[in-house]
Length: 443
Image (cartoon, rainbow, N blue to C red; front, side, top):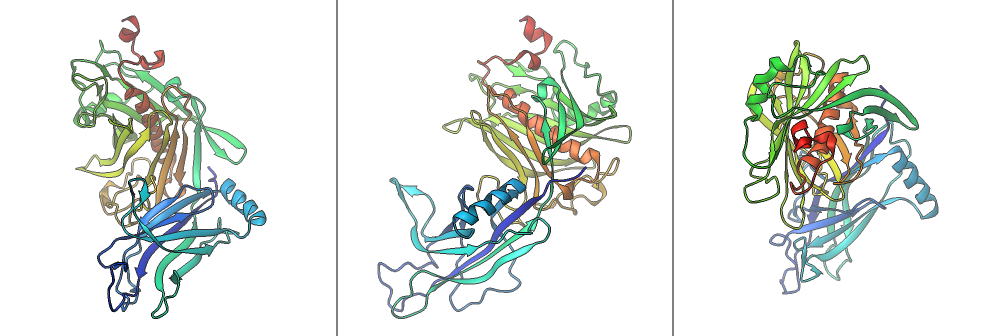
């Protein structure tokens, strides 16, 4: 499999020094007691906001300072071409940062921050698909120079690094058992097939015929979830298996905890989520790799809440890799990124707990758990909202794919996220026939 070129542009290591007046006045902002933040903008990409740490003006930024990421932009080949075209006709491409004192947010319709100044750093993205490039690393003067004293100083690091990815596209909705293609430019090559099944309520032991060895892993399914009968409205028994082109199953997502409506409501609540177990083959059976929980958020967001954690069959501990919300109406992108949050909020690169990536068939790296790590961007999956035809597009970082089973596990996870959008629909809404068991259809 050949990857697609991607570039990861990061902004980090932020710091701010502001000279403090000798005679404090009510109009003077003292950053030692007031928070600072900045807004980071790259052309048509969404605006990102990050907190800016303040350091005393007499201190130098330490060389051994732990590197933190404030914002990340993921650029595909199409993005790079588009940005290059715009820079020809609209001036040189640059990253623009506005620095504010005060707290982030809006109060009474007015931004609460006070603009301190703006900086603009030119970017030349030529050749960054193949080699890293540092555009700036150091201090920049911010704001107007007062009559007496020096300007404020803003420290930042801007760099671009190659981040090639494998791109997969479902050829149909996951519940319709589609093929999965690998995309590289204009080339579409089939790499996987999917088999979706619904276990009948009346037969607790029935499973898809594409899972010949899953019965020997039944203990894993019951230990990670509950298959007991539950009163009230529920959706259960769904599974989807990913096969390679030879027909061998290489990953599966199995619903291990039913999606149940909370008492007196029509929705799956956060306090009682449904869950999927993502499994990979190994030693003639299925072994757990990850667990996805999903629920329906309340309030104005009314979205699909989710939490994905990595699991190990040799440890009871689990490491949360992703937790966020997708719009139920518009859909969104499920992201595992251990550098910066997919929602644009800055998170330190070192904030993620150490976790382990499966390496190859039968060798999941569990002997090193939890001392090996996922780093940077791991994967993303774009899914559509309720009632829309969804053919998930999955991107997986090359550094986390060492065999077919690695890629298949992420494809199965993407399918589980997409199916959770249906599993968390209000129970007053009817699902399509592919998602219902025979008893539901007869009822």
